[in-house]
Image 1: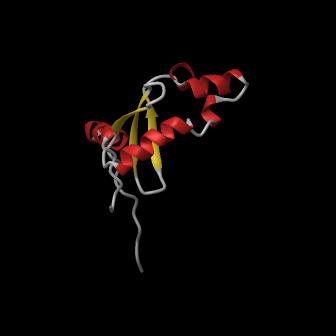
Image 2: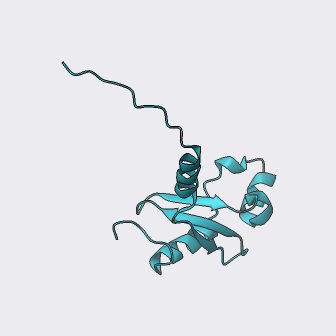
Image 3: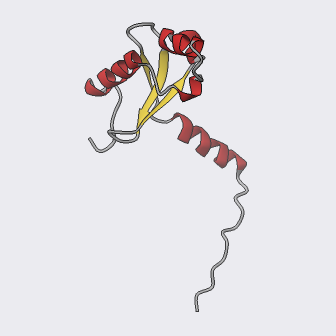
Amino acid sequence: MTVWAKAPPHTDPIGTLADEHSYLTDGLVPVTCAMCATEVLVRKASRVQTSIQWQSSPARSCPEFADRVAAGELSARIDTCPRLREAIERAVATGEVAVPDE
């Protein structure tokens, strides 16, 4: 009969913080929107998955977000700006943003 045991508690807060920092920042590449010059950090986990980290409030730095928020939308529910998406797709096409396994 197999006996299962829980793993011992992880007590290395420095390692945990380093792992968390690495997970949140590794592979992020700055991409600038050609329309409004908003800069975001981008990472591709696959061809279809894109992580975008805004460096400023989207509603303050992106006219598309500002217009939609002014019209009553919640900024958290806006997928992204079409012009920013074009900038990201261009960065992927030119190899500035790497896609794993490609």
